[in-house]
Image 1 (tube, rainbow, N blue to C red):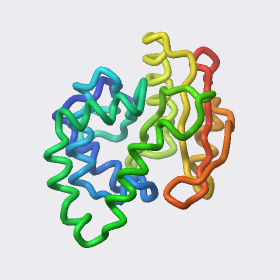
Image 2: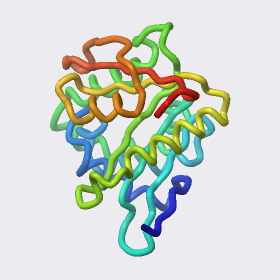
Image 3: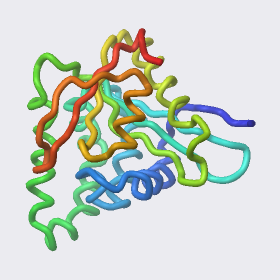
Length: 202
């Protein structure tokens, strides 16, 4: 298979936002719509606290991506400084129709400080693979690239949060070497937080 895993670029934002929108049906970020996701992923490549990778094949659109943060608090702050106005504009119609969107946004911004000081600040924000490209090891390859970059940045431990009822995602992270650290509620739903040592990941 001819492909490359490369760093996410600002120009990838529309496709990456679409992959997230189609591939990740749960979670607060998904509920904000593809426009918001596009602005978020346009910001990440220029944020020192964040990075991402995409799976690119010679023909056709990107088949998958992973987005990461050394610090979710830092990434959110940097993304808002870079594209906060545009994020707000695309989120406004949903916030008007659904006031709970604003409450969810506040909870999301508070989340990094509420998961426990014993957990690492570094986190896998999102990962998605196009439906037509699944079961080919793309997700695992993207995860290996991300964990290698964390290690290069001297980040030894990384966490990820996933819905407790999302069994495919839970199995995926367990297969990648993540171990369950705690279970808590987020946006009123049970969530599992996993942790991995970057030097010991599969």
